[in-house]
Amino acid sequence: MADLEIIAIHDIGEVRPGDDLAELIAAADDAHLQDGDCLVITQKVVSKAEGRLVDIDPTDPLSHKPLVEAESVRILRRRGELIISQTEHGFVCANAGIDLSNVERGQAALLPVDSDRSARGIRDRLRARHGHDVAVIISDTFGRPWRRGVTDVAIGCAGIRAVADLRGTTDALGRELMVTEVAVVDEIAAAADLVMGKAKGVAVAIVRGLEAEWFGQGSVVDEIVRDPTDDLFR
Image (spheres, helix red, strand yellow):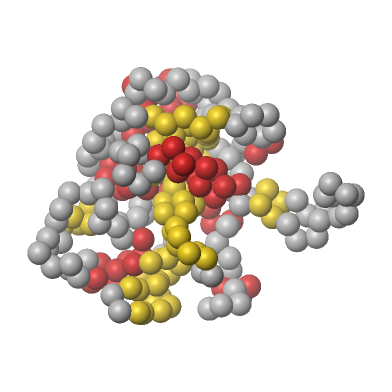
């Protein structure tokens, strides 16, 4: 891989229900897209554009909890006000991915219904209307078992491999790799968050210089979600 470049797109503006994210990105002054770029877009603006906003009581800090129950297919753990649950997408996360940050007071943002489909739609419109052949990742912030702090991961993707399977290849010393699979889209999402941050108002970034072999059709984030039969902790 050559040098990697991560470029924040600063001038998307406030996204509202019904907005066309592909058009907002294409019109942004910072978005000098090139074929082979990967766009990383935060879940929050995708949810806003798709109208995945629900009114809650701004005076009640727990008013979003019924939404958590409704958006969960399984509750794994409860501790005080925190709920760790599994969503219909298969994600295991805090509060079913429902977020109150970076939305208007009195509203909660739900996860997109199908983030892979959201990513495909944005990718297809950029290619059809503007001739940009780029990959798209929808990112969100997740905690991790056994480690403190949060990091961004991919919850949807299009035009890029979700997992790079290195099994059968060799390491730097010539030993065959037996189990190594790299969650490429998660690594890209985390890298992009370094320029987007949590409070900078930057919702889209370009990651440039990725391996050409990672690009293509057909990948979905579901490839990353571990099957419960292989999960030692549930």
